[in-house]
Length: 163
Length: 158
Image 1: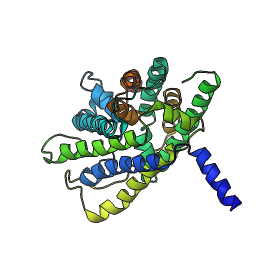
Image 2 (image 1 turned 180 degrees about the vertical axis):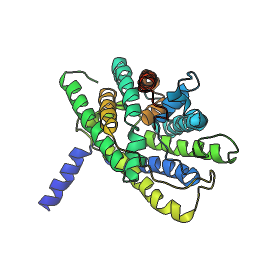
Image 3 (image 1 turned 60 degrees about the horizontal axis):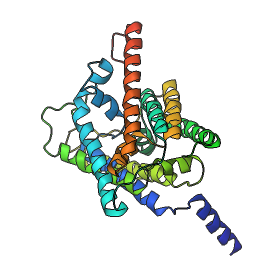
Image 4 (image 1 turned 120 degrees about the horizontal axis):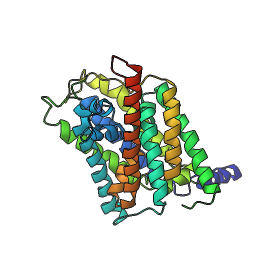
């Protein structure tokens, strides 16, 4: 009885917003990737869109090699935006905007752009598709970005930057 | 090169499926609150561990698909491609790039897919982050093209 209460209290502390929104949302993320995989055998990832879209404006070989997939990657990204907009209209009741400072978004975005391209994937490619594939490369990639992300976020918070 | 990568003779349902798959994916990112940098930062600061359910919940579903789908079809119905898991070769770049990505993720609270979804939930300031991602990917591509030239590698990089 006491042990049960302790477990409940610990769960409430670890998950102050419950787990259903995260678990249900995660299932949809996986379902979207699984639907594309079932029909096309494509392992969907979000970050290659950056390079494939740059091939529209740059002839560099690094981007041009994605020219063949740039159109469907653009459609995939449009789908992500529209799907999130459906959530916003139905459940969120309008637009939501962040309070995170623009310099953090811009500088962080630059690191994300460099890192995902060197590291062959991001949270969807490595995290969702790669871990689902039990790929040792992806599991190593996930551990690497989780570690530095936790350190960075904790250091920034400790320096008093909020948010 | 897989047929999916080219745009010759694609199945008429190819693009619609990509769009619908993206819709479901993006709805999930919205529903799970991953489109909000604050929620990701809360996870990284150990204040709310819900993100683990998003990533591993998603990975559980794709993991199931990797097992079930190849037993249902010999080849993908819309591309004719064989089914493979997402297995990429390991080298130190996976750790270096992952580490750099993590610094950006920890600083901004946003990753590429969640960034696009964030635009969808009306979070227009996320354009700072998406712009940054393009700048970073461009800089990395220019740098990689140059180093490939100086190595005089005859074949494609990977």
